[in-house]
Figure (tube, rainbow, N blue to C red):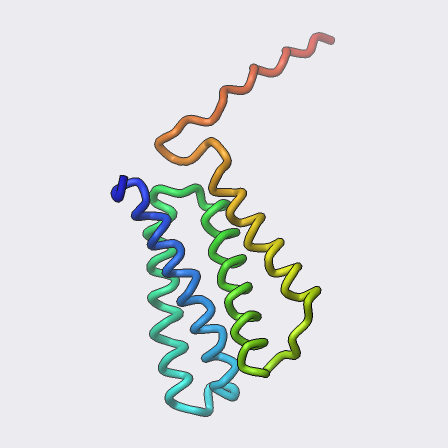
Length: 127
């Protein structure tokens, strides 16, 4: 069970790191502040590495959508929690929608190692 879950755990950790590097990017003030710039560089590299590892077992489109969706939701959530962005119930609902859609992608069939349903061959056209 853990073996099948590992790529998803790596993907989730990579999405968290995406939120960290996105926040650090904002704090770096155009890469002029050394500590946030260093945090950005390290977490961006680790986040990409994790995404690259995850797509060995998770389809790229699904993994990328989840990585971006969860990372974006965490980034906006953190910005609202720290007062960088104003809190809004509608924002929270839209973020929940992003996370819900990302979670829905995990539930779809066709994951690597699990064949997608076969599609019938297209009919040949005759002239």
